[in-house]
Image 1 (tube, one colour):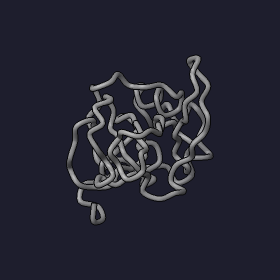
Image 2 (tube, helix red, strand yellow):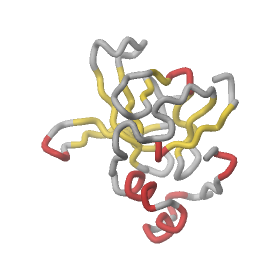
Image 3 (cartoon, rainbow, N blue to C red):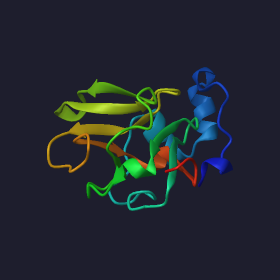
Image 4 (spheres, rainbow, N blue to C red):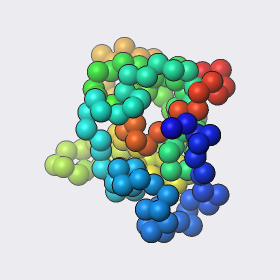
Length: 145
């Protein structure tokens, strides 16, 4: 699905859980609103190389450019930097008995995935934003991506 196929909410902060359940599929709700994850190597954007802008599937906020996407072979679409510094929020996630950094949409606070730091990613930032495909809409041909 592309972003032009979706009716994004004008004020995502005003939506209740019931509103989100009506707007999102069960899989989207589980990941975006309940911090779930999709199985590795199953998402529609894992291996996509189509140019464009990746938007938050819940609210339409521009999150990542396709030219920051790279093949990390981790099972989820991976990016080395967000589109803008204020498009995502990062917070410590101590769930599952480990410390990670969760990535959320700055506009609607939906869970997107996690970011990992480390040498060896062969990217300009040494960061890997592992984002669930179910959280994204690809706006093809948008911008100079």
